[in-house]
Length: 295
Image 1 (cartoon, rainbow, N blue to C red):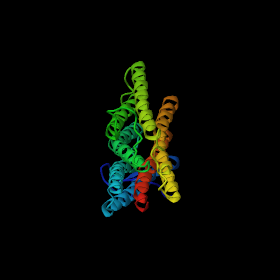
Image 2: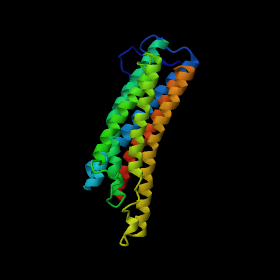
Image 3: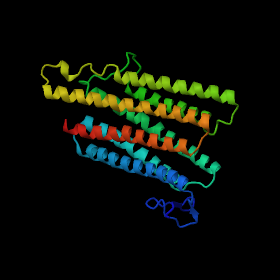
Image 4: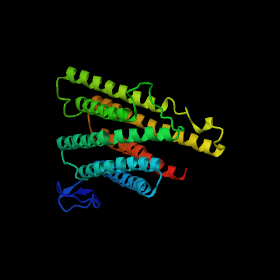
């Protein structure tokens, strides 16, 4: 029977994750399946982000249309930054630890990589989506009626949201969960509520007036162009609402960890769910930005 195996710690074998030069062999079939799946999730997400980021980067370099070029450049940077983090996650997952304590440490490391990824890429994606919303909205950006709020400030506060999300994760199930239980629970809940308040504010700002100033209000616009803009507005809405999956996954994973204890199944759920969300949100944004070249 063929078993998954892993090389020495710190030794990178990116294209041979299950071929060992060492004696660290997975000899438990059930555990072996978990390890293989988590490694494959990281590998496939990394490959997809490199592909979609490269497409957006090529379009940004080739087009002379400023709006399309900027949008593609922002999407490409978000995808390639995320790909770097997924390469690090892939390395951690293919060098799976042997005991429970070390595996828990690996899960904390992977979570830290995720949040450092989101801290950089989420503001970039927010800025790109607001600029895309303005382009598909007849040049009118859907912003709150507050003088000091623009797409740049909204993008910046998304980084603050990630900081609150990181604190929530570390206080609820991460390395700070060992603090006084009532205190850590209270701080964790406060951080989650602060993060959600920012998230809802930005999401509503992005979607509240997406129809205003659209091409449909201009008689000189053809019916084909109107239909195309409506489709692009729907795409912007879908790309923004995909983000709703992140707090849902985080909350479900936290509740499962508190109820049944952190384990391989919770770790597997987070890897698969976050991988799918990152692929859909970042990859989808890159492809949408690139495909707008033909409009």
